[in-house]
Image (cartoon, rainbow, N blue to C red; front, side, top):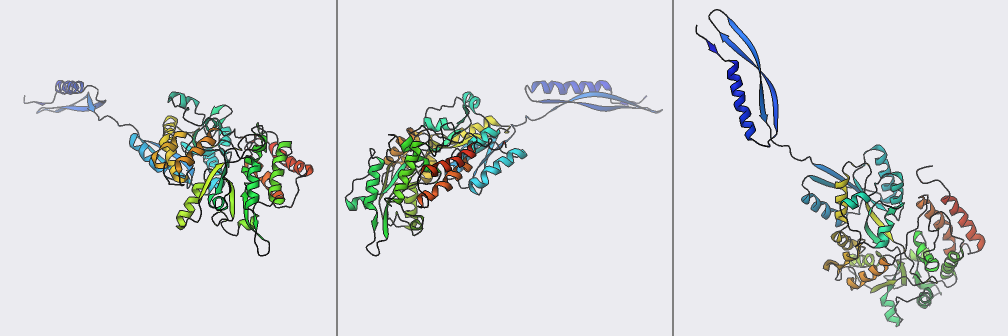
Length: 483
């Protein structure tokens, strides 16, 4: 009988050989498939079909790590030199992670509700910028938008010691660390002065031990009327009268409160020391007339044209002025700065104001997101911030880099940054409304105090009691976002 047979034994022998080869492959991933074969026996009388089943081992290539995308939200325009450089370096060092920045245009007005909306819709990314100045940092923490970082800080052995203490503490909410301090400044705690005007008159330059009354006397000296018509032609001092008016108030109150109490629950407009501070500023405007009116401020750049001797500012003031002169290619004056003069409290009017970087509570990649924000707040990150516009990171060593030790922003950047560091290191605590209605509170006291500076109201007890009552009504409201 002539047979052509592909037998079951032959199939099993072949399968055994295949298994042996797979075993030699060691750790190579293997997939076992069930393969159906047919054994066909052909004779002259009939065809016999027999079905058999054997195991076939298929060796596959090892799967690579899954690519993780980390999305970082920030206000448009805040990238500067920092984020492009940091994202590029982070992605190079972590080939399985892709960090991307997602700027939100429109400033705080657009940014704050956008983050809240994305959180509610479940479309929020992994990390974000926040600010305690606009109180959105504390709002996000209270609403569960950002995650506490204490465990991530501990597991990563992240060292908080290089950071200004005030900046580190201001990043907390209810005792937990909800952000890493990215940029820190002491508020509008500096006095920018027109050095050209002082030296032309042989007037003593502002000193670290200056008192507010010393500054007031200098301001009187530089406030002068025009010989034609007796119109005021130059002024001595331009203060802040908006949200950052708390700096001047703290020169009188110290850190026992300012516009609001330290716990953020009580309005302090009619507290004795606060009234004293606001009355001092009222006199500067209306009695001594050393402060330019809003109309005068609209008449041109008073400082660059030597029609203003001194102005209250923050770390941004001097570098911003220098950049403006660079843009025009014209340097009509020399300037310098000092700390805001001491008031009766014996303290510089300051507070530790911080921009933070945070991890989103809904992120599925919190360790990776934390690694990204931690890379942004190192010494190099602070230096890159300082190179942007003169306000550096939240650690003193950011200003030690040779790139910001020359004349990038001033005649002596090293000396300027030493002044920054001294004020940053001593900055007082930041007070914010306990119900997190910061923007409402700012608006109430700014709008209601403006008539004082315009000469349309007088600093009477009745006036302060009325403004205090309105501010207290805001502070008594439920927590923002909860009613």
